[in-house]
Length: 471
Image 1 (cartoon, helix red, strand yellow):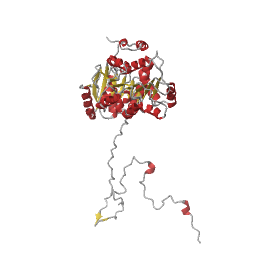
Image 2 (cartoon, rainbow, N blue to C red):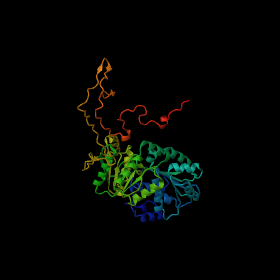
Image 3 (cartoon, rainbow, N blue to C red):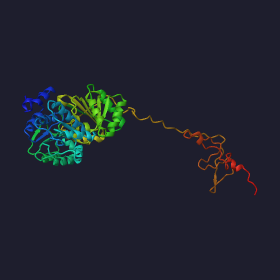
Image 4 (tube, one colour):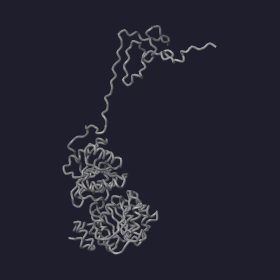
């Protein structure tokens, strides 16, 4: 059996790995670390939760033991699609590089430029960045990329989904052509393969699982639900309550608004829940994520910002509140559970309009997903947030006086008005003795059912009562 000591890592790195409690590398680590230490380009393809981060962090630490960074000229660069992934990689360098004196700079949005500039001025052995913030520093003249010896492009397929490929190409032109490149992705669509061919030179390809495969330790199920929001939320709550082994869970939504609405709903129903989406400020995002890792929050309602690469080993359940519109996103979402050999469960809620998405997912993973039947029936449940609709008013029939006079008659196309009891109301053609129904919709001051006044009636202004002086 292969151990970390067989991979060629330095003594200081091996000590940190052992202190972290790891002895046996995962397949992607065993395949990627040796060629990376030989300064070869690497193309790594593996499903989420297989240890891709350590497969490039550990060899980088060994290679960086010799040498020192210069101000504003980082020695290595790691590109990540989201702030959370970048921060997570920085944590890995802190954990495995504790025996080395290396400067690690983290360039992500939501943090002041001044603080990041100070780190760059001291010199960064490792620069971890999102593409947008990295280019901002380059355009401000605070960063020179000519000293980069090793480039890591992590979660390449997510970079494609988020529209970062043009930025990646711009960054690659700022880095020396002779660099070493490590390229990692969970899925390998044709576009990503073309990008890998552009950036890598004679790479060592390590593919430890079929592209777009899901972990065998994850139980996958589909749950039918109604299309109305309150019915869908009720189904989710019942689904959570029926799972006896729920320790914690991530609930994925497709839209940021859905994340906020569902978070408020679950909170009202007494669930321990937090929210995570791209419109939140960086401090709130990191605080919420840390609270979920520390079990202070049991459920995390999130957008796809939490679907890629986040290493939270003990997630027991994933709930897809919205079926992912891209089949590859399904692989990443359910990859948050069943990590490191643990068992997990993934439930996807679907309506009638989601069938095409499920068909694409099943075709991608080459697996037929079974349905899960809820014990309760929520179709007749009352809306949780909707107000009860008032009953329709029924108008009582009008009662007429027994002494009602005859209605006016027409003669020779003229209205006969000889009767004193005839009224001028052409619409109703009824006399004054008809009892008029009370209109409950009018206020008392707004009623206008009295006799029609002549002129000003009793409300003649005082100035009009003054007699005029004779001239």
